Each structure stands twice: as structure tokens, then as C-alpha cells.
Amino acid sequence: MDSLVGRLGLVMLLVLPLAAACRGDEGDALSDARAVTIEQRDDGCNPTAFPVDAGETVRLVVTNQTEAAYYLGAEDEGLRPMTVPAGETKSTYYVDPGDGEPHTLRCYAGGGASTTIRVEQASARE
Image (tube, rainbow, N blue to C red; front, top):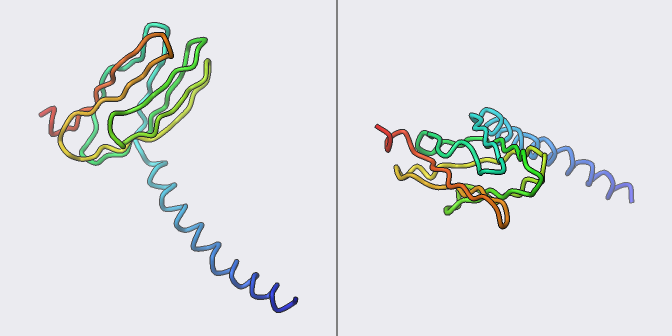
């Protein structure tokens, strides 16, 4: 039994620093992401467009100022869909695919207002 405990301890000593290092690198990269604030209101979402650099990761800070749940989604894989409950703020990340094309996010309340948010790469704006 002592041998098993010793082996498990050795494995933990080897694995935990590697896991922390991997998580730290990603966490650092995401914490450095530029923040884009999106406000969800009764009449829709604001802003209706924001710029990104090709391949840029931005942190979307979404504040729901309504009394109903709002949803944020994308037509591509750059954003996992997210629900923001009434009166709450949530953050997620959008990763631009770097293809030079504009992309759209959809911000909407079930049965209520719907807004298309245009995401434009710097090269598409020039």
C-alpha cells in the first residue's frame, strides 16, 4: 500500500506542474485579450459592429440590462453560444478565423429583439 501511495505522489508531482503550466499559458493569453463590451437592452444589442485584427481573440463582456434572458451566438465556430440571464454580465471569447471576411454574431431575446453584430477584420476595413 505504501508503494502505491508513493507512486501516486510521484505522479502528482510530475503531472500537476505540467497541467498548471499549460493552463497558465492559455489563461495568460486569454486574460490579455482585448475586451469588447456588448449591452443587451429591450430594443436590441449595442454595438452593431466592432473591428478585429485577423486571427485576433477578443473577450466579449456581455451585460443584459433587460428582464429576460438574452442569447449570443455566431454563424461560424469562433464563438460558443451563450445565454445571459436577466440583469447579469457574462464573458466569453470570440476567435476571428483570420480569413479576411466579415462575420456576424447574433444577439437576441427569445421572442423579442434581435440584433446582428458585424465583426470586421482590419484588412476588410482598409
